[in-house]
Amino acid sequence: MNSKERIKTIVEGRKPDRPPVICPGGMMNMITTELLEKGGFAFNEVHTDPEKMAALSEFAYRNKCFENVGVPFCMTAEVEALGAGVDMGCNNREPRVVGYPLTSLEEWEKVPCFDVSKGRFQVIKEAINILSNRLSDVPVIGNVTGPVSAATSLIDPSVFYVGLRKKGQMAHALLNHVTNEMLKYIELMIDAGADIIMIADPSATGEILGPKFFEEFAVPYINRMVDCIRRKGKISIVHICGQMTPVLDKANAITADILSFDAIVAMNDIRKAMGNRAIMGNVSTYAIEDAEADRIIELTRNAVKQGFDVISPACGLGMSSPLCNIAAMIDALEE
Amino acid sequence: MSKEELFAKIKDAVIEMDDETVESLCNEAIAENFDATEVIREGLIKGMDRVGELYATGEYFLPEVLTASFALNAGVDILKPYMKKEVSTKPVKIVIGVVEGDTHDIGKNLVKIMCESAGFEVIDLGRDVPINEFVDVAEKENADFILMSTLMTTTMPGMKAVVDELTARGIRDKYKVMIGGGPISQKFCDEIGADAYTVDAASCVKKIKEIVGI
Image (cartoon, rainbow over all chains, first blue to last red; front, side):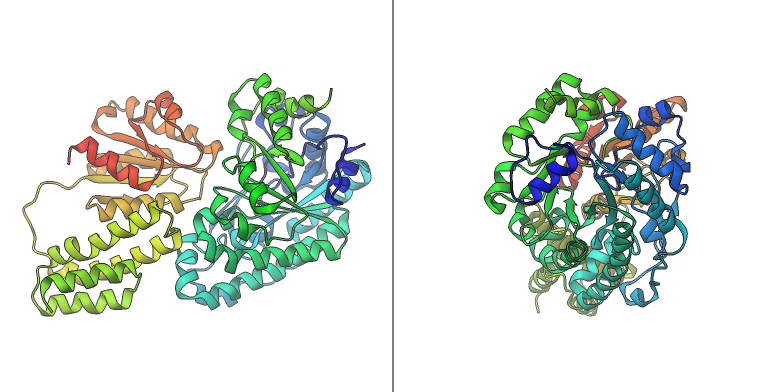
């Protein structure tokens, strides 16, 4: 079995020969300084050049950093198109949001619509196209920022979170608009050849929102993205960071094919709330960065034993993670 | 309404996150000639303390804490002009910010709110703060504490850079450096020579009180 077949088997509710080892990209960063140096890449150049973007993702794959490819390497292209100020980063820092166009929720109507025929959307589209042609056996993952994280890239998160209580209808209006636009981006990536779309919504974590707001403001919009991916016949992964244990029953209403949580969420609790749904996770990224390779092998096997269907880092990799530790995740399953 | 009743109502209005009621009750307190400092201490801050407890026990979440702090600040704005200038001891002064490279400031904001409601003076440098700015502002403001947070492993070295910069300028002992955030641990705190690590906003305030001995 190759990893494309393994993922397909899992999504169909069956057991593959072994779990695939996946790191989607986007918020779940798979790029490290050692990898960039080894391949002679300048990180800040790959975000605007489709050839380089595709080449870096392929180079990660060839160096045993996971059994998939995935782009882009940040969460900024789609929110920049909605007006967020973006710093393009440097060789050891991914692009990040530095400026919010909105000062209050009342201004939500000022958020523009996408033009996916322009700018970095086309870079990502071409990169996906190159990857899906070049690596037909390897799952190509396209990454999109989830609704709450996208909204909180356009307005100061504190203002947004306070608004949930005081100005709920306006928060819904902003989330609705942002979600509508993200659907265009998802379709663009799928049409370019993406096999899987990962929706990452770190700011939607139940740890911040609490169960009531998570259910009202995160789940419905995430599910609209999932529905769009399903309509296009592709696989969806949803990753949410942080302590999700108090809202796992609400998270079970997310209809994605595969759900992914942080390392602090225990598999026992996940299974109790979610039965035998496909779950991705959750080798500690702190261990991958700091521990020895033997420990990573142990942690990976332990994740399989606990019943994770897809093996992945618990969150984005730290840039200083050693390549040998990343490769150890595949090594652990490959004998 | 008696003073005690009014204070209790103000406290409840903060807990209920009701800024309009807080405002009208604070105006009432002014009209009754109650001492503004006492209204803040016995009404607003008592309410915020309870909000902190509700947060700690998982009944309130971040949106509730933020909304309650908005209500608290609405009350403080009304009372401030009526506060008597007290000849008090110098308040604990804190410089706080998220280190350069990181724009996640929710945790930092929470620490700021808790510190302010504990009566500390907080200078907020915001997010994505350059290393030297922590040191420059702490010097200029004659602060006691430098508090740094980050959510991203990639920006952790910035915390060490601040400690090193203090050492290089020969002023390391003038400040207590405290750090926090998702990827931070006591081990990292020890490694970079910071003074304290705390896991959340409430324990941060506790630690500061412990260090200054109040």
